[in-house]
Structures are given as C-alpha cells and as structure tokens.
Length: 320
Image (cartoon, rainbow, N blue to C red; front, side):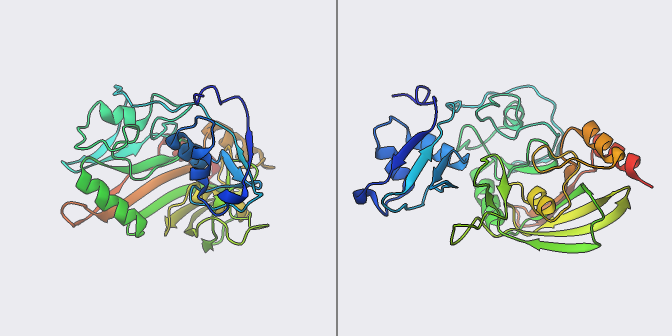
C-alpha cells in the first residue's frame, strides 16, 4: 500500500512481546503497512509518531504493550529543481556560499513547500560537488521560515563534513537579535532541555518532563538586553547549542515571547505591541552573525548582516 493511500488518518500499533526492545523505526518498517523506511524516518522527525502519547525518536526501543500512534504525512518530493529566485549572497568561494536568507523563505523543499525555497534558489546559481540528499544539497543548518539572516551552505563534500562536525561540536559562533515583549533583564542565561511538545507536533518546549525519565536535548541561550523599548526589549542572543526553535522557546517560556511569533507568541495588552506584531507578520528574529573556521583553509571567517526593514521599522515604532 502506498504512502499516499495511508495518508487517511492515524494508525495505532501495540508493541508485541517479541518486538520488545527493538528499535521503533524497525518495528514500523516490518509491519505490513507498505511504508518505506525513509517515510517513517521523516514522519518521526516531523513529530508524527508517538509512543504512549509522547513524541518518539527513531532509536527508541518501546516496551511490550506500548501504544505507537502514526499520523502519516503526504509524500515528500523526490528532488529539488532550480528556480530563479532573489537571493542575497554575502560570500562565495569554491567550498561554501554564505547567504542572507529573507524572512518567509523556507530553507529546503518538504511537504507543503515543494518550491520557492532557498535550495531551489541555490540550485539555479551554485554548482554542488556532491548533492548528497537531493532535497537538501549542502544544507548543514537551518533558519525557521520566519527568521531572516546569515546562513552558510556547503558546496563540497569536504566543506559539508567540516561544517557538520563544527556545528556538532558547538564550534560555530552564532548571534541573533530579537524584539521581545516585556522588560528583559540586562543579561540572562537560559539552560533548559528542549524537545517536541507532547500534544502539538509543530511546537517545541522545555516543560514536558512529566511522565518521562529524560526529555529533549540540552539547550543554552545567552541573552543580553541591547535597548529597552516601549513595553518590550531589543535583545541580542548568543547560542551555545542550536536546537529547533531554541531562542523562541527559551524566551517565550521565560516570559519574554518574541513579537509577531505565530507559534510561541501571545496576545499583548499594549496597543503598540499589537500593532507592531501585526505589521511584522513573523517573529522578530534575525540571525545577525555567523563565525567559524573555514572548512578548507582553517582560517576563522565571520559574516554578518543588518536587520531587515521590517525589524528596523518595529524598533523605530517602539523607541521611547
């Protein structure tokens, strides 16, 4: 049975005694639903698979009697096609290309966004030595769709391996700027593990420990107040780790949600915050700086970009 035909609703599976302790992805692949291993892996990554009500991981080994719930997604496109799209390139050499991603641009094709992505734009102008994953050639990190700013993409196998290792070792310097609701203290460090929300697969949280011995992955964000604004603060965020939605989750769950954040934001009492959030139409978050050792030369390189017009306009509107 094809992946498309199974996209009709959740499927519940009870782990049998002989499957106890086996990897989750192998259990699902062996069951006679006709799902491919790649589809199962993608659904797990998208939070479409739960074990006893909690988001699952591919390596998880459920106990007998555990209830697995699978919500099949639409089939992924098989390859990305070049598209002539606007693309701000900050630097390019034979190994890497550094871009200033626009807010609203998805990084790579996926279900719901098969075209119009950063990868489509890159394929129209960049020669990749080895595409690797045809849907994500050269992609070693991502920015959320609504986040603007600096990204590096690998053009060669050497560059990709070097950058992946650097990100894994947290040897990449990353700074963001953001506008948050409330009066943020001059300096704060948020050190809290982040994982998928137990009830909403599109959200992440650092508060879902209940019922689990461990949860998520450690995430550390250093936040510095740059300017106090009207009922809000312009902050600079330095990452030690790079978890999905890290800055958005840490700030929101500590009482300082990003203005305009459609997922982690909240209704504002102040009219000026409501107006600015509405005008932004996206989270007020910009990846300002990216610095690392060049994967081919070993020399430290640094790239930065100024916040785009929408964030500058928001700052102007909120300044005392």
